[in-house]
Amino acid sequence: MSLRERLPRGLGLREAGVYYALLLLVLGLAAVCAALGRPSYLSAVNLINIVYQASPVALMGVAMTVVLITGNFDLSVASVAALAAAVQILTVDTIGFWPALLLALAAAGAVGLLNGIMVQLVGINAFIVTLGTMTAVRGLVLIVTGGQSLMVRTPAALDAMTTFESGRAGPLPYPILYMAAFTALVWAVLRFTTLGRRVYAVGGNAEAARLCGISVPAYRIGAFVLSGLAAGFAGALYASRFGAMNPTALQGEELTVIAAAILGGTSLFGGAGSVLKTVAGALVLYTLTNGFNVLDLGANYQGLIEGTVLIGAAAIYTVGGRRGISFPRARARLPGRGSPPESPVDPARSA
Image (cartoon, rainbow, N blue to C red; front, top):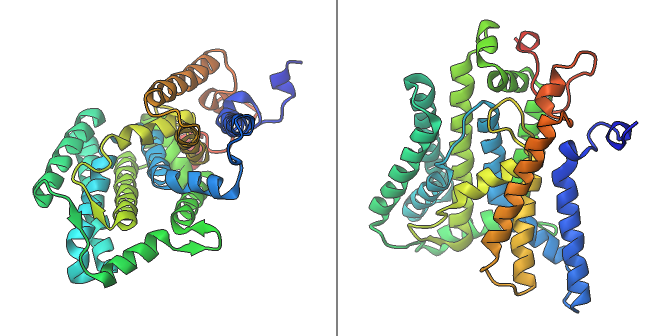
């Protein structure tokens, strides 16, 4: 019996590889810091800071995972987050924090809805649609800001935004709690509800899902709306953190969000993915960034190493799938083995 066969399900490299990678990365950086006489890398302050910095990307990554599971992806999330930040800062001095936040989320959700309609009802490829909205929304941000940085001007509004983003529950900053609550909610829906099983079914085999009476367009459009709302919330966190924003803020973050999902093993072809692993993927990326800062390595090698890690992770998942190593979509079709956590299911059983 091979080592893989002796391991309990869920502890194999394919299922838990991103968790092992995160653990080894943290322990490796801790060992290097100790050898160099640097402050303890495993201090609570540093570990909490890593999760805090990763929270907005992880939050967007959770929603991105849902989009990927349904068989699409969304390149516009960073631009949508910037739009939400701009809307919030432009309106918060006049209408107050909570109405401004709702307005920002409404704007972000509207872009998500537009993406979903264009992809699912009009039939345009998701790459083209979301690339277009990414560019158009970023242009809209430049227009509404006049190309200038925005700042919150009233002390009351600034205080409300600071409390929303920088407040703490014990040692944990609020963004960590927001991310954890959102992740737990989406995980529970995907894992335990008919709605979640149908999301996997839509991505695994859209035609079979349709024949079973599942409204494929509704689920895919809903995933885009969720992605827009999550991006809007992340943008509101960004605006609240600084009380200001630059019109080029968050540019390029959409690639980090997608990278987190890929590191977590989410399939780019739909039907397979785990929001918990996506969060772990985001933590891997931000642990790398934090390690570069702590070790004073500068940014010159950061892109090279992060890109190499991403390609390596994709290679492991791809080769593992070809060799039949615990690949979720193949495993779900094997009789008598049950359905793994957050894996596709037979659409006929979820209708």
